[in-house]
Length: 120
Image: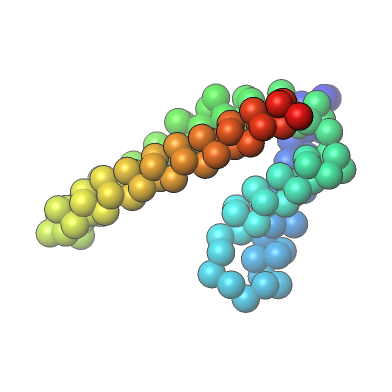
C-alpha cells in the first residue's frame, strides 16, 4: 500500500505538470514542469522525501527498460535516419559533452558553496 501511495504522489505531481504544460504557452515539456514542481515541493517540505523515496528509487532502477520502445522506434525509422546519421551523431556527441561540462561546473560550484558554508 505504501508503494501505491508514493506512486500516487509522483503521478499527481506529474499530472499537475501536464496541466501546467497546457496552461502556460511555452515550448517546455510537461515532464520538465513536473520535475521542477517536484523539486519545489521537496525543497519547501510540502512533500517529504520519505513520502516518495522508495518508489522513486525503483523507477530510477527500471529506467533503462523505458528506453526500449524508443530504441525500437529508431530501428523502425532507420530509412529516415540513415541519410542524416552523421549529423545525428555529431549533435549527440556535442550535446553530451556540453551536458557533462555544465554538470561538472555546476557540481563544482555547489561543492565550493557547501565548503564556504562549513567554514562559517
